[in-house]
Image (cartoon, rainbow over all chains, first blue to last red; front, side, top):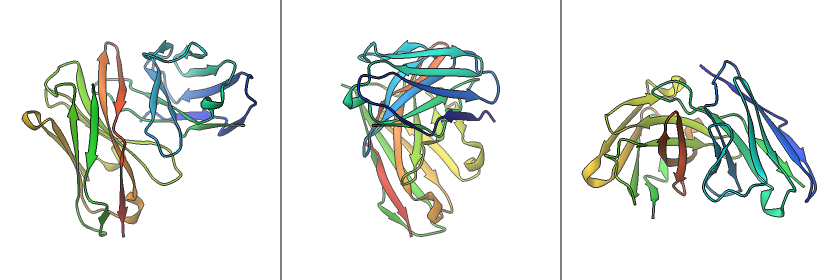
Amino acid sequence: EIVLTQSPATLSVSPGERASLSCRASQTITNNLAWYQQKPGRAPRLLIYGASIRATGIPGRFTGSGSGTEFTLTINSLQSEDFAVYYCQQYNNWPPRHTFGQGTKVEF
Amino acid sequence: QVTLKESGPVLVKPTETLTLTCTVSGFSLANPKMGVSWIRQPPGKALEWLANIFPNDEKSFSTPLKTRLTISEDISKNQVVLTMTNVDPSDTATYFCARIQQVWPDVFLDYWGQGTHVTVS
């Protein structure tokens, strides 16, 4: 079973700064990784899939990178609406098993 | 417009079976490029993937829960049903369904329902 480990658990940043969130897989998942944003009381929103492909309507300040076992979500010039919890999710193999990381909370 | 809506009981007793329904619109469950996933989130905790179903009846389940879960779909009703047997207070959570989009080799969750909260007590 593939395990995703996200770090840090909490990231304190100020508006306008850059945030870098890490996601590490327990075994290689090539580029089969997605990132989601979740705000309190809301359903998650897809940001990135294929490790680096922005989903429709996602601003360019969100960038995904990495492959194999190490992945990063970078948020440039943080906006107030970006303070949320971010989850990575893998979908390696078929049929896919969409396991999630434990999340990183980005707070002010 | 793609929408998914979860429905089911708000309160379930321990040892009972939980049945949740996801009703979709704006896409067809018969579309070979799509499927439906169930995910849950205990209060204040992380997302936990539960199960997937695809049009060819291909299914996958969370390893820790696979003996307790079943998933099925009724294409004519645009519904996917998840059942969980022998529930326990630790199953208290918000349960989400989401559309799986396949853009080979990527298989991601692009639309989500609002979630339905279930308490086991």
